Length: 156
Image 1: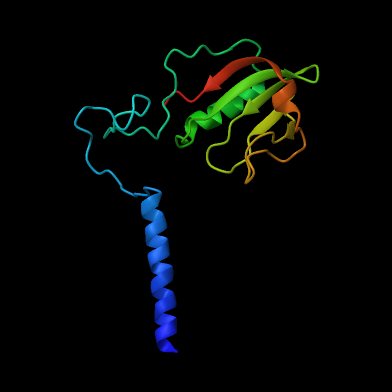
Image 2: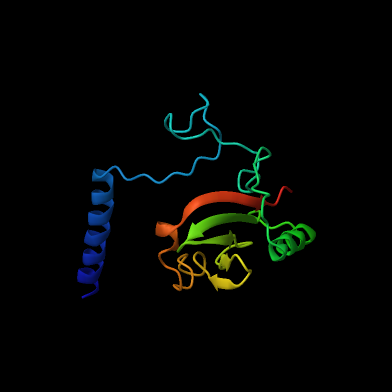
């Protein structure tokens, strides 16, 4: 009985190892930079030791400074005094359902972005959360918004 069990296990092992070899399956993890400066193909960037995770704000960003409501200036001042967020906070203005609205990005992962009316009232959370789709209260925002303008982004 034991011999039959061992024979079956040996047959299964041989089958899997044989099928893996037939498909040329090889798993390797490169640890050194390639000799020619290319990593695999022309579309793959060369490995770098520089930090490429943290986004850098655009130094040439043109902010829409006109007609900023007082409540929005207070939010910008608050963000400027808080610890730097990663990714940096940015605020855009849009036209949505015939009115001016302001979208404030989330400070980090899985957090809701905020959509404010021109008077500062929180309308909804169009992005973020566990699904990335916000709270569902303004699901059409991404499709129907127009006239995007960068109002502010954290310059740090």
